[in-house]
Image (cartoon, rainbow, N blue to C red; front, top):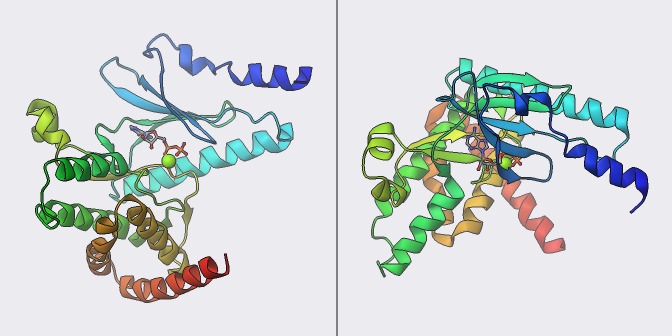
Length: 267
Ligand SMILES: Nc1ncnc2c1ncn2[C@@H]1O[C@H](COP(=O)(O)OP(=O)(O)O)[C@@H](O)[C@H]1O
Ligand SMILES: [Mg+2]
């Protein structure tokens, strides 16, 4: 490794001062994505957990471009989150940010992403040897809540840009999850949908953009389980009811699917 590259890699490990701020809990690394590191810490009081999304500089990018890109991503994610929150779309609240230092601090969402919760649930059902279709009610209800959350997002003029089951969280309602029987809560699909990860989001009312959001989500559910894909119709049914113009988007989705199929045939 060349010396400059090594230095750049080391520099990337130096965390901004917010990570050492006296009132903050020692940040705990939760996940490391391609673009961002996600830490759990606290905000103002030790009793208020927060998620700290840090975008370290990329040593292979031109430094000026790198700073500009990081600033842009953080500001745009924060802007969209604030707009969604104000308009009643279920997203984490924004607590603080420093776009120059590369971090965004948002509300910590209890619970788990839908992908994991759904896999656990499907596995349990398989282990218990329940016939297909048993308990489908819970799956259908989950799909309904997802359709409604995405509909609300689109209704306020925001498209997500990366709508996968890892970017949808299932937050237990306090009664069931936190005080009640936690073991039982883990094995259910109950809870409120909270949309996260707005790094690729944009403000758009275009049917095409909205349809692509739905298409990406449909594929994500499909890769979890064929059964989940067949139940995706429930997401669309609820989505169709969620705002004026949603049905036009559903029509557009058929076009987007066709294009997707053609593309995969060509390879
Ligand atoms: N506000 C939050 N509360 C709790 N966990 C979160 C929160 N935001 C993100 N996470 C967790 O961190 C993971 C990565 O965060 P995300 O915003 O999706 O970044 P990335 O761009 O790396 O996918 C999520 O899949 C989720 O498990
Ligand atoms: Mg993500």
